[in-house]
Image 1 (cartoon, rainbow, N blue to C red):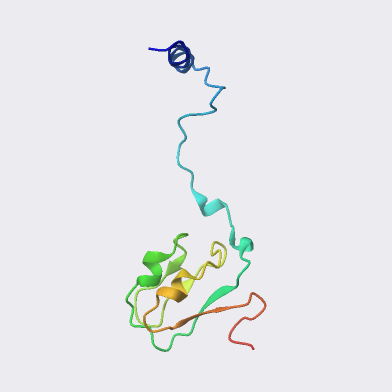
Image 2 (image 1 turned 90 degrees about the horizontal axis):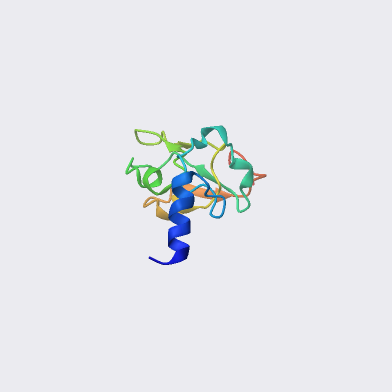
Length: 108
């Protein structure tokens, strides 16, 4: 074992891991971190016309902020949505449109 590995192992065992920072991190809950203000490309708008409740938008959302159970009931929690547009891209019925942040409720 090299001298560096021996020192690293001793440092870790002694709790002195300042060289590498904390090596064990507990997962955090992001519900307290409302990051929806990070959106730069727009926001998804659910049209609620052709939805077939396939749940593809729910499964692809990296933030897990899409919810709904039945046709035409899906919605986004804009407190956490980053506006990536993956939900609109994957929707087989094109029932989700990405709109600029200023436009709400279909205003054009």
